[in-house]
Length: 114
Image (cartoon, rainbow, N blue to C red; front, side, top):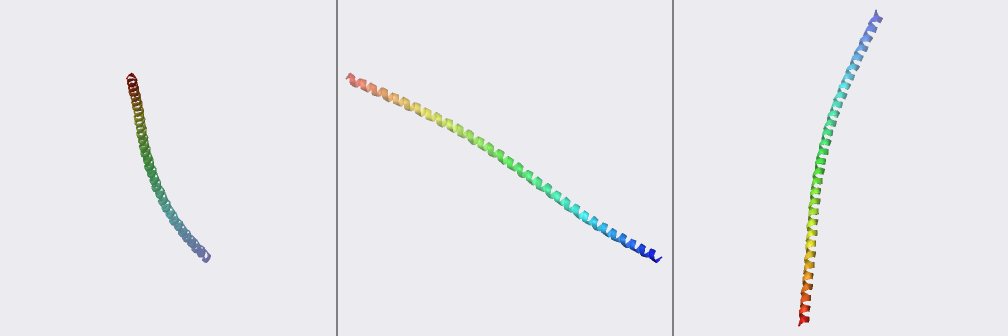
């Protein structure tokens, strides 16, 4: 009888120890799940932040490309205007030289005629 009571007491202690161990494991599991959820939330936030940064940088890049394209167009237009002005100046200089040459020839002819 005494042996049976000791065995029963040992089983109860073992059961209590097992229940305490199970409760401790459940607590550890709960804490691990909480940390996992926090880590997942942090990763989601970080991903959203990175995606927002990437969208912002892509928008800035598109804006820079558009601005550079505008500047290139304006520079091409300015180059065309300068080339046209230079051509016009060359033509004017040629006309002036031709006019001066014609005037010199008239004076020479007039001088020879006298």
